[in-house]
Length: 114
Image (cartoon, rainbow, N blue to C red):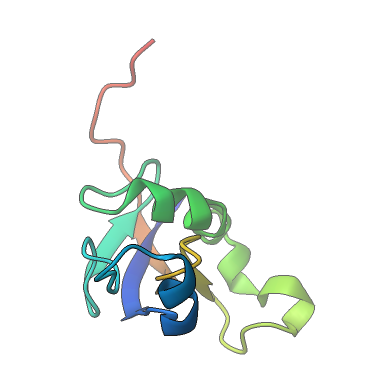
């Protein structure tokens, strides 16, 4: 299992939907900023939003286990091997992530609870 680099590409706001459904003054995600980088393997990286992790972890897991050696989804999604572009599940202000497979081997740096 290798680490996966997670980069925040963009924080967005759908102004039309936010005007109709959002609270007054709603803006882009306040938890993450463009250019922020995390590394993931066995668990959610410190500082990454729990909801974002739930939306992207399956892609992180696939890349960490070698799915990055080929193209995702039969080559009809991302043209670069070892890369996935994903977003969190916030319908008003989604955050867009770039996930990249690395060659850095993961090391468990905690004691699992049994």
